[in-house]
Image 1 (cartoon, one colour):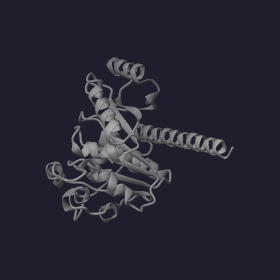
Image 2 (cartoon, one colour):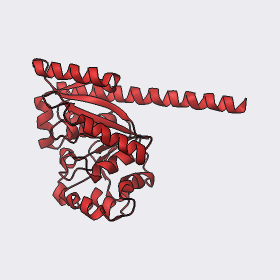
Image 3 (cartoon, one colour):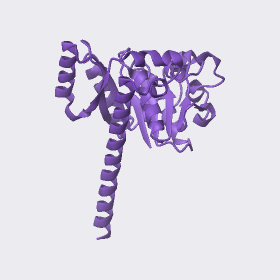
Length: 272
């Protein structure tokens, strides 16, 4: 099971847009996917068409009230895609978790106890490096970092990388940076091309080949409570997220093959 946290402490970089649309595209590829909305703003929840203020239960109950993850999961309009929703009730979770035992592992423990047959779990994190984000990083085996192609793109990334390293050292040694995703790209803009080049020079192969363009349809679809492929699959935004999903699936398949190969080699060596 691939558990991916979408993280960037800078707001407005396309993090929730990426979480919703990657999860939807994975579901369209018939990959069983769970989207966990861990942002108190609940934008991933409303972006999939749910009234966040009408929820009877949410991820808050998992984090604070010891509810099981299965008990808060709701089915979406898309086959293969489920949602663990969120709303502003989650704002108080960080304060309530301060004195909780093993507070950094609340989400990780909930995922481990879950019996759901998911191939992918996507976690939409809040735009800050708080206890909720630490929970997401502790529960994940990969991090996807959306980076906006604008002036302050690199600002804060070093702080994020330090946080990821701290989590690796103390809480989750299996965590790794899955990739950097360039978002809101406008090829007519010299600055966007310059930022793209700088990010690729700095992070190298960690940067995904797919680039998400600045696209009107991507901005419109959340207000309709639909993912981009359900709203306008012909749009450039939809095609870019479909490409990104394919890149994600191919990379996961390659990693699984390499892990299996290493395991088989170790077994042969042991038997010898």
